[in-house]
Length: 326
Image (cartoon, rainbow, N blue to C red; front, side):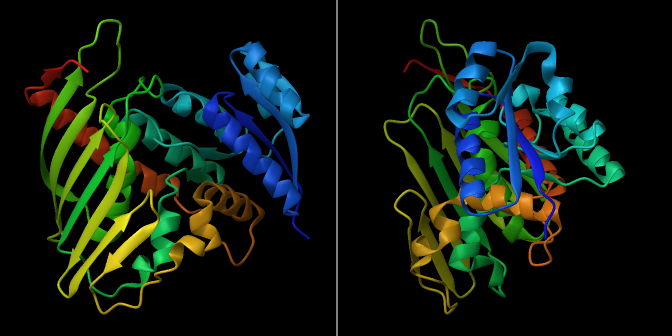
């Protein structure tokens, strides 16, 4: 019988609520966990979310006390705090599931991965779109793509403004591209626009287009926006034998390749609930279940996506960013 894991959520915002719900679902599914509590800097927010799930609230300087009662923690704080909380957890011997991005600086991500390896702990990261690729069957395709084109547009929001649109949205597609390219990026170019509304303050650009050349020969174009008129999440993957076009919002795809991809992928459990898939596989990896030896996305894999995202941001910083009133 698997050991009962004592789990908690750090961060009582929107994503903290999502993750708390996944732990509730894990309990209902019979996964051996004990949902201990919620931590947030803001006590009122921690108490409100903890009350919903009938768990204990921790706040302010109680992070150490919170971690001391856990075997595994989900980090759903603002992105700039991911590394700080994760490192404290890993040093305390706690397995970590971090929302993406892994960190906001390469050196912090490096330290997280090194700590997890040193302590022999699971470090998983929430690149949950991988579950959709898996459900479609793309990871079983024998050919390597020659070209990938991704669009991930969102409308204006007050959320996630502590990072650029690259670390907020584009990083999902950068991670997926890395899983298909089979190698590192060899060069890139980028252009960007920034919102200039009165009273609007965000870190980095709000709309970025990037062209990336991978060492294996695949090229890719990425566009991400948080100032678009409508949401859009699409990807076109071009192989020597045909192409696959995916609509992540509609959960549909078109396939002109000879590969036996699953047209009904949207009905697969892992695609219906990618976040749940990601969280449950983290728990299974921590528990050491033989059928799930690793999480959906490891810390090392997320570090590669972070490195590429930061390279895009660096290219944006060197380019002329166009101002755009929303």
